Image (cartoon, rainbow, N blue to C red; front, side, top):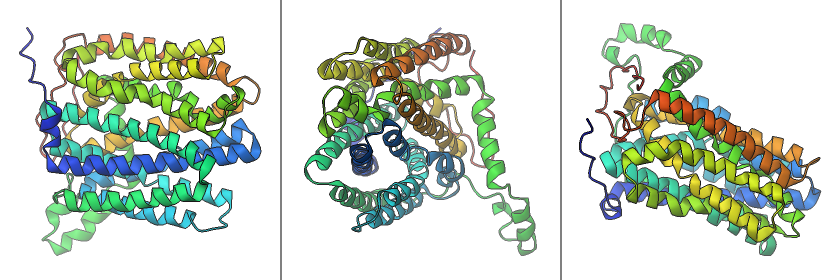
Length: 444
């Protein structure tokens, strides 16, 4: 028998929390600046080469570094204070992007610097996601997650349009200067706007800190980064519910293909850099608007039940590009697909609540790493395919493949977590003691 639904939080309640406001605004700055710089570099390369493959490679350079950062650096947000991790990551990225502003730096060096700077995004993002769960609880956390996802998407949309405008009227280096400034401001907001918290997971040798003779032995027994990464992968992939939710999140690989080939797609329709920016923005604008509404007006159980059907529609809508629509119709198709992408809120929340606090940042980092690396690989593959097929055909094929995968996951999720099941309400479990890791239980 179902228990009473938890009371829904309001935007006022969430933004009344001072720490959340600081973390939220730091995200606004970082995401907008990042997207502006990435889009500007991508359009610059396509303008100089006219190659969909090369522009796809440049766009992927803002994603593929997550394979390193997501696997080996995300756990830093569990092993060290999360506020410190966020501030250090912002500071490093500010320095790297500032170097990109120096005149006469060649394009290949700009791409290389962007690649390295992006490696510090996974630990920042993992720390932000984990510290949000420390700041907010219950339905406030669910709404806070919706707000941060909406902010991320809004920042991408604004940054994409701004990148197109910057290339058309200002040039690439002013966009990079803005990006560097956003990192500095973000670090100040996090450092001054959130309180200090201890690391969620204590080092393995902490219990023998006061015994000098045992410290060396404890350090030798400490698992290597590779072993800790393997433990994180086991945590995520050995639980059927977590594994299914993870794959729902990774469906984004299929329905964000229009981003990676936006420049050649717009060029094929007779548009320039501004049109390409609009194409990229349209892939997220629907989700930006619909996510807070989905969180506010759709109950927790209903969100979980709708996750599968919405995931199918997100990908299936892109098949309409096979009809070769014009620019305006294309923007409508991409926007509609992104509206259905609100299912990610349900998948994200259900995933996070199933992971113990002391492993949460690492698990989120692995999930994010898969999304970003998958997107990077998809952008490169789509760019290569667009050398021989029309960009519209490439997007339609990607949408069809994603639809098939989404259907399989929907059927699988119904077996793992039946509608109205015990995890359907999206409630956060009591946090496990930091001294041990509690195995995750499968639903159903």
